[in-house]
Amino acid sequence: MKDLSIKNIIEVTKGKLLVGNEEYVCMSYSKDTRTIKEGDCYIGIKGENFDGNLLWEKALENGASTVIVQNVEIEDEKLKKWADKNVIKVEDTLEALYNIARYKRSLYDIPVIAITGSVGKTSTKDIVANVVSKKYKTLKTEGNNNNNIGLPFTILRMQDEEAAVLEMGMNHFGEISLLASIANPTICIITNIGTSHIGNLGSRENILKAKLEILEGSKKEAVIINNDNDLLHKWQKENKENYNIKTYGIKEKSDVMAKEIKLEENKSTFTCKINNVEEKINVPVGGEHFVLNSLCAITVGEVLKIEVDKIKLGIESFELTKKRMDIAELKNGIKVINDAYNASLESMTAALKVLSEFKENRKIAVLGDMFELGDFSEELHKKVGKQVVKNNIDILIACGKNAKNIADVAKESMNKENVYYIRKTEEIKPLLEKIVKNNDVILFKASNGMRFYKIAEEVIDLWKK
Image (tube, rainbow, N blue to C red; front, top):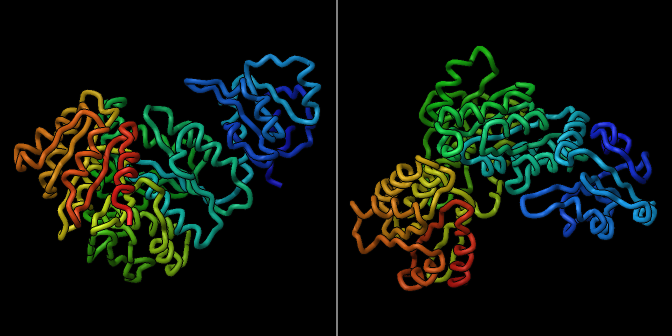
């Protein structure tokens, strides 16, 4: 059995069992009293705005079998009340979470594929997991639960899986190092090195260093990189003797390459050698970056010796996590592309390129602020403005303090009447109601804090079939 007993949990957390049964086995874990299920082990996490440790009784009332808490004084009367449950006290619940997840991970001798990168982590995770799932029962990160809380809770979901595909995000040095020490990946993927969080890290070179922390906890069976990315290309040339590096790409000569690429509005095709046999690949999502994601999945498939027909099926049948390149087809031929979960120069550029593929339609880009860029903010927003012009976008709506730089640059080359700068997000929907015509395609893209995905959903409701 690979589930943990209370005794195991006490040993790895150095905790104290205040009341309960050491032989009881914990099979599922939760940090949210609102969604807790019968029998869950509740771990109290102290957040910025609330302390989950104070909700330990609520967790038990809602069905938890076990609670793990810190900094809580519990009277004997209450312990007697919950004598049929398990109450564990630890010094630090976050450290306890990490150590429980590390122990759980150590029980599994399976492929664990870890994915990081400046952009494209979630979409790459989705397509890689779908390919891997065609051969192995696969656990994957749900949504973007890719931080120091989401990743260990993902590992604690492991039951009888034969592989895992885990996403790793970061804002600062040391964060990927922690995640890698918990996940102990066997295969590491770095999708690209861009400008996300450059305000925190200071340079793309430092972003590369932070991403390479993924190798610290790895068994290093394979390191898979996007060879078209300049910094990763340079790194692999300098380190090919030190690691088993597998490369994929479109422009640079790589182990897995795409040729005869045909990009359409919401799909693409390309040819590629898989196990030295030329194959035609159909990708159900538009955009060159999804060709790269597919090449990454093919590389993983080759490393894991997955059959060619299963690799192709995995690519052709994968579905994206919501709010990432969701295309809604509405009344009067209107389409909305909701890609508003997050934004950086690289993901903005990719999204605008996808929008440009709608050759027969008027193209409207609704773009907002990109966050965590620090001193680079003005420069990078201006570069987005150049991409708007380069991709022949017909109408630009820019919203947000820094997005003014996007509009200012676009106005230099576009008809000024087709460039709108507004300060408040509430103004976006009324403006679109005035200017949208039949067959228009509208792209929403901004950092998550701008909440453009909500506006996109409201706009979709306007023209639902």
